[in-house]
Amino acid sequence: MPPTDSFASERRYAMAGDAASIIDAYYSQGIALALVTSWHLANVIQCDVQDNRLDQPYIRRINEATRQDWHMLRNMVREKYTPAIEDPRFFLLSHVLDMMVFWGMGSTRAKLTRWLVDTDGDTGRETPELRRARTALETRLFYSRAPYWAFLSPETVQRLQRHLQGRLAERARWRLENGVRLPTLTSWLSLTAPQPKVWKLPFARASDHVDMRGRDLVQPAALRPPGTATLYDRLPISADTRLAWVLRLRPLALMATFAAAYTWDGVDTAVRRLRSRRVPQPSPQDITR
Image (cartoon, rainbow, N blue to C red; front, side):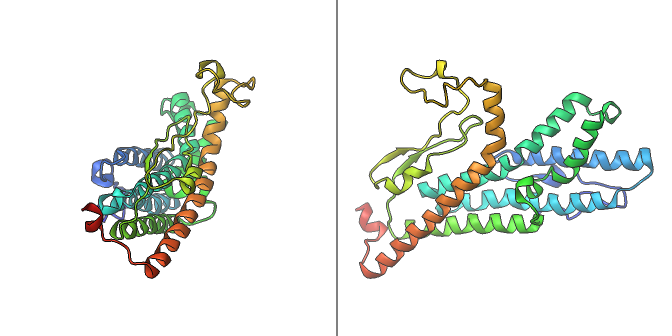
């Protein structure tokens, strides 16, 4: 359980830093969560001290969303410390789901960075546009309240994410326990190559080593190996514009990618289960021998 239910209190105390947000170091996100929480707390304190107004709705929002954010980070980690992590498909799809959560808040974090750079943390330097940005950030700067989750409550988002992670892990453990061999996968996600080639999964054989790495969508055609540039690469578009497109579209693209891969993973595993009931399968020990 997280250390507290009250990250901010109407009694004018707050929990910050490791005391409130420490979590497994798998993604080093405990520090990120602590810093974001501290930014929210600074807004509450300033409003109370300067305007003599304790923003109680904001305090409740901080407590509700930050608690669910903590649980979402724990959901990412828990199944990765079970035997499911030995399954290549689980390893890939679990991380795609994680990136979907992180990058779902990417544009919001970019707005925070712009606000910090332009104001140096001093609200007295805010322009009307930056003030509107801070108001939006006070609502959306949480994993569980990212704009892409529409009108879902933070708890609903967290429970859905936990369910998806759990189903992926359950399927992976069944495959491992029943000696199902899958192809070896190589993949990583990056800022400019955020889409793994999951469309290769249905066509890969168990003995294959499949390169799932996504294509860099920002690299100019002139910097690509000879013969590899596409029509998209040759479009007269600056690298900054391409990067802006990637930042804006990658959460939606990852959602679609994950939804398709998750569905296929479920269907494929269900078919394998049906077949295993009809044909005796060798045990993992027999396969090892």
